[in-house]
Length: 305
Image 1 (spheres, one colour):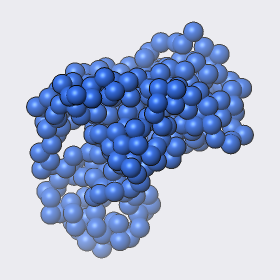
Image 2: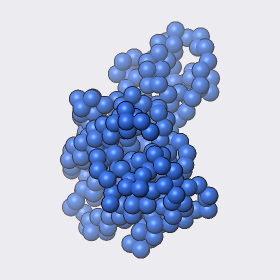
Image 3: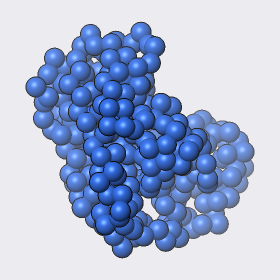
Image 4: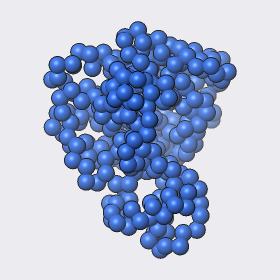
């Protein structure tokens, strides 16, 4: 990894960290989810970053991939377990980070905070192992141990992942349990480690209307409307985007028409919300790390001893 690439990863991580801390401070009882996310988006732009994917907040039993549509009326309430997940890139070099916010005031607050602590402790344990030569299975093992010893289940069909230029899901897959894999970490690999802890099944499924998408191919489109929307989508350079961004520029009707046509052409990948199969509550914590003898956590802008 040359110095310019390293510096880009560090800059992306610093912006992502600042935006995440800012966003978490906004997640309070009575706040609008839509307004919070739009403020986070504005903060990322203000800090000089580009979106690696749309900032999203998944509540309670939904582990990931909830990004509100333009008309969303969701307001945070007591007892909500809110996962804020965001990604920033600098010239394609990505930082991916997430944190759980437990909104206090419910009878179960102590248990919910322990649930959040489970995914956080699992992440911290795994980060210390992000060194060249470490078997990926060892990361999954410590993640599973930290979560289970607190009485919760790791979400086994969600995983961390490698990061590459303009690619947010690359090899290797970083399991959240002791999986059978021969993968070994190598110097200067960039990975996102993201443990999920659940009070429920520890397995997720796809459910609901997707509002996060990515262009997965290229085909000529007959409709002028679709071509205009596609031109905007192509500015995201293959990275995920949300319906709301297109609605702001092109309107709801034109956007819906274009997405349907792109989906029918099989060049659009959808990311539906991912709830727990037993609708247990889910927490998440995530950092991006450069694999070195002293792992460099870009979303903390510091090294792990």
